Amino acid sequence: MSVESVKEYYGQTLKGSADLKTDACCDPGATPPHIRAALSDIHDDVLTRYYGCGLVIPDKVEGMRVLDLGCGAGRDAYALAKLVGETGSVTGVDMTAEQLAVARAHVSWHMERFGYRRANVDFREGYIERLGELGLEPESFDIIVSNCVINLSPDKRAVLEGARRLLKPGGEFYFADVYADRRLDPSLRDDPVLLGECLGGALYWNDFLTLSKQAGFADPRLVTDRPLEVREPSIRRALGNARFFSTTYRLFKLDALEPACEDYGQAVIYKGGIPHAEDAFTLDAHHRIEKGRVFPVCGNTWHMLKATRFAPHFDFIGDFSQHYGIFEGCGTQMPFGAGGGEAAAGACC
Image (cartoon, rainbow, N blue to C red):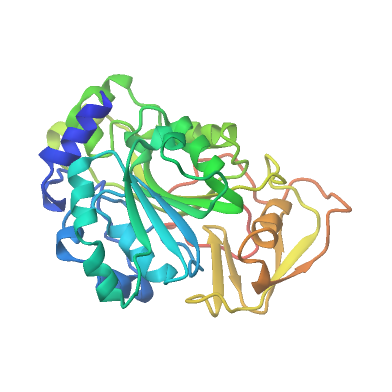
């Protein structure tokens, strides 16, 4: 299926979230209070054109420079613009002119609503596979987000590689998307409804992990996941027995990460201070780190905390002088469906 067909589906076929035929591109999950408050300040014209599948607002975004890939009408971009504050900024990229027209039409309204003296958000028309053509400075973004868009792309590796080039060292790509429990028949990508509903272009989860590592993100971390129910009979028949999951991953741009979680006898202590995470900080589905508690970590987790914006909030115990083998609990089974992504204490990926 061509990129032009995707543009037509999101620019003309869909007039709002209610036109979707499945729940793949919806987000029924619980929303943290601070994000819910930010969403309450977004214009209804923007909210009704939301086609995401997850929450793509990580912790500690104030003052950050953020890029939103496939921003659509701007729901996530505006929520982030509120949360990064006047010292931060958000750039949204989308290929659909109709969606961008909605986003651009409400910049002034949102700045007034937020009480900001200047616009801290802008929108650019372009393709997420060709980020190098948009005049964005390499290594200039702290955080890149995307919400249920990469599955639509015909060149997912180009998206990942482009994002990595634009991230600062220690920055992260924090995004939600749809994945399958098996490789899908390529012909499903030719169906405009299956592709547009975020199903036909979904990657097999293990192929995604391989692709991420090839693009330079050595240790993808699953944050949350939920199974998707496909109830429409004709769509379910077309998909066969494949199961689908809406998931959120975070990928850090850290050259020191290893292919596996190696044990160096290290630990961290969370000191608190990250907004909205005073009692515990959740790095991913396997790392919910309680304040004041000694928490054993692998070498990769150490780097994800030590060499990123989270470092001031942790004490670090140990170093890399002695290796003890693989970190206990690391495996290769399908990561989805284990309790909805609840983070465990002292466990690795």
